[in-house]
Structures are given as C-alpha cells and as structure tokens.
Length: 214
Image (cartoon, rainbow, N blue to C red):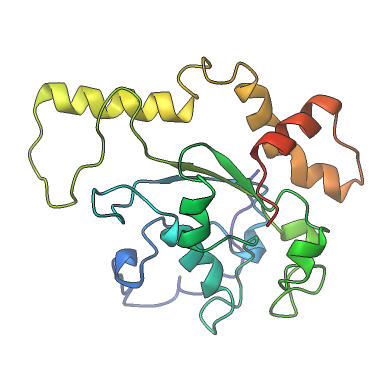
C-alpha cells in the first residue's frame, strides 16, 4: 500500500522549515501522502476541520489539496478530482463517507488533468491514488469543538473518541453492514486497475453507493 519516498529531497538539508498547513486551508495533511513517487494506493482522510459557523467541516480542506497540484509547489502530487465546498454541502458529502478517484480512466478525471499524462505531464495511472474521505459529524457526541478549546473533561474526551469510532465504522456497521467490504474494495481498486481486473459485483455496488464521480 505504501512505497518509501526515494527522491530524498531534503535529507541533506541542515534546516527543515515547518508551517501549519491550516494557513493555506489544507487542514488535512495529504501532501506527503499524495506524492507520485510514493505510489500510494489509497488515502484515508478524516476531516476534523471547523469550517462552518458551528465548527463542522465543509470539504474545503480536501478541495485545497486538490487545487494545490496545479501549482508549482504541487507538481509532484497526484490527487483525484475533488469538488468545491459548495458541492460538498449541497450534495451532503460531509454526512457520509465518500470515495474520490474511483475510476482513474473516467472522463471526469481525465478531463481534469489526472490521466496517464496528468495535470503536470508526469503523473501515471499507476500512481493515481483514490481517497476515502470521512468528515466528522455527530452520532453520539457533539464533536464540533473549536480549535481553541484546550481543556476537556474525561466524559468529553471519551465522547469524542467514541464518536470518532462510530464515524469511521459507520456506527459499528449499523448504518451499513457492508461497510468493511466497501473499504476493502477501495483499498484494492488501484491495483485492480493496474492489472486490468474487473471489480466484483459487490465492489461495484459499494462504489455505486460511495463514489463521487462529479
């Protein structure tokens, strides 16, 4: 699933400069994971941003990561097409898990630059990684806490962890008993495409349910 970075672009540097990714709205740190050289097959992203007036995510962090690949700084990135925050909210994409980049050869992806040649001329189909996005939402606990909340009670901490587990597991499978299978389908999808293998009927059903195809 993961291949070690081989370019070693900064290992010889004496100084390593770091910056908070939130300064450019990339609250979800995708940049190291979506480098073409790493050939990552799938990325799981949990968006805990506080974008809305009541501190829930609106998908903007994911969109900003997608947009970055079209800049000079993002020329080594491979990110599937991701919609704007307006589409996220109107489509209810923050209320359930969403798969992006499900079909590397789909016209919606190719037209956006992510194809065998790619937006920057050097991205390959084999390195075009899908993303599985989970946005925080309330199931059993109001987890929409401000970044500037620094003290939590034991009950609040337990509630946050429990709610996160419920979001990640589709409420322990009660919202979708096939969720574990669908996650597995997302994990193997890129390798299937490399080998020109067709999905199983169950995986096709999963992708029909969870994929965003524009």
